[in-house]
Length: 291
Image (cartoon, rainbow, N blue to C red; front, side, top):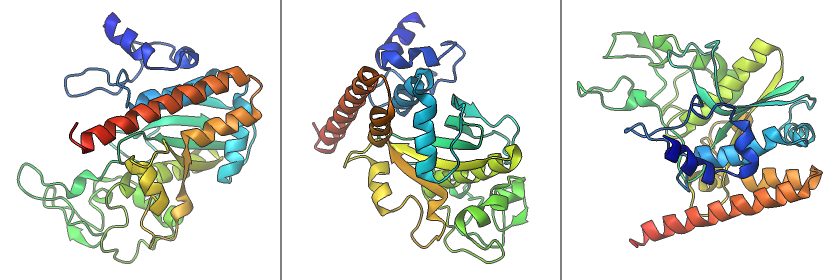
């Protein structure tokens, strides 16, 4: 265990270490063998801690988060707090297993729900996957249907299970819940962006704050999320594309370098993150070319 944590520390920006109060209790992302993944150079959790852990510990935190809030169209105003791997313990969306957000930044006027990606694409809805019985709980459309797994009739299999996504989707994505949508507007990795957008809407209502959902990503031509940002994180036919705002790690650090007092800190983080992105990009190129 000690060696495992040492490997993780070596893969995290030294300035971010203080953001993790209890290394054993921290909700690390793990593989099927229960091994911590943050020691890997391409770990999305690690690069999120690099950036937002450093920001959490920085005396520049409030002015930088004010600038990011203004950039995404919500009110600025500190003091700001940053929680890494925040879990919706209030179960605002009625999920049996509440969404765990990579980063929640909360100020006095607004909250930022931040999903962090590196070399991986977004997650997809499990309801269209073939179950062990060989059936799909959803046919891939938002339309009146019966879930063969539980016999519940609903337009969305998740709605039939009491999950409240479609209470917030109409406003967040400007979609009419009273009409069919074929295919479902939350198909593919748009599902993960939807979950963060509706959680932001739920937090805004619950806390009486403004809120925005952000997709923090590593800008590199070979990374799936970076490529998706160019086309739009959700289907272009969905009018509420502004429900989630993409912002690259490089842009976040550029804001920090522009506003921050401690230039040595932000220049060091910039070099650290750039090196990680270059290594991960080279790794993907080698895998693609069969090296």
